[in-house]
Image 1 (cartoon, helix red, strand yellow):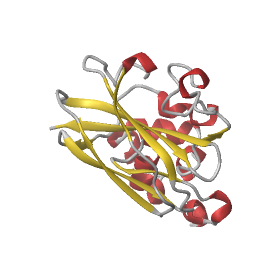
Image 2 (cartoon, helix red, strand yellow):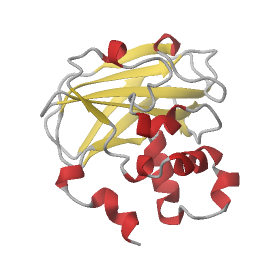
Image 3 (cartoon, rainbow, N blue to C red):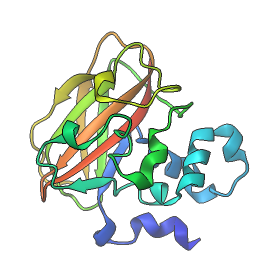
Image 4 (cartoon, rainbow, N blue to C red):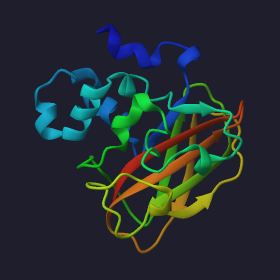
Length: 197
């Protein structure tokens, strides 16, 4: 099916996302992209089903959740409740609370960015939702986050991996990552649902 190959269509659309632990849009595309008409999705993965119903382009363009020219003003330019969509209205389904599928992680885990265009990174900022925040009933806001780390620069590469160390988390949390790409002032923000075990 032609629509299934759109995310790989060429460098003009090529950017990236966190593929592990998978961002919400990438997880939905990876799981259901080749079977997005399946009636089973509504029962087995209701959050992805809602996201596909709201705007399937959110999943087909999982690599394009970027905004230009924020000049580092991430919090001021991104209202509470819109962090998971990077304040892009077309991706608002990603902000919705509910039973998102989680990836099991330990207190020390690796984040993997896949970047089709090999932009490199000025830095990544990594946050985890605070203990007591409930991703199934609450939209994510800045006050719901614990800052974990900020990396240094990364040279252009299709795959960038870095290790993250945390402590004191158990169960379902939201991993929130900001990627400041190196080639332009382009900012990407994603939510990944993790289960600390």
